[in-house]
Image 1 (cartoon, protein in one colour):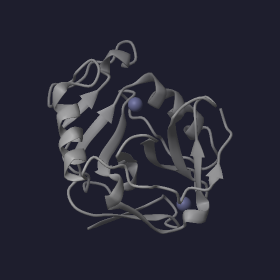
Image 2 (tube, helix red, strand yellow):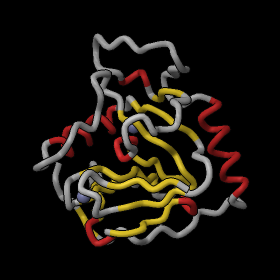
Image 3 (cartoon, helix red, strand yellow):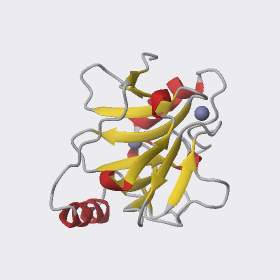
Length: 177
Ligand SMILES: [Zn+2]
Ligand SMILES: [Zn+2]
């Protein structure tokens, strides 16, 4: 079991079992959301110097909000977007990314203490890497989402009986664009 918290500690998640994957996402949506989040008062950097957002993917039924759920607010890049990013409004720390129809949550890597992050498996959507960025070749750098990305997600879903568990504890909304 792993406990991770927002920067100020008022929001805590308990993560059980092994993560599905440990990734860096270079997609333009994650970069756009990072610009919004990093502009909020007291926010820390969300993307690194490669334009990458660090995530650790967990089954939805293995992520529990231990405390501070009253601070959670969802953000969507457009009103029509089915993808939401959930932020802790106590200190403006992004908490997780939720493809709402999906069976997993991508928990922001910044929640882990220095040195405690699960080892990186791959980078995704590197075709959107900012101009001039040279990615290290320590892990696969697929242009979109590669076969192993989907294979790991589908294996996890099979283990869940192909169900999407209800996930309803985020009540707030963040309207920043
Ligand atoms: Zn906080
Ligand atoms: Zn992304």
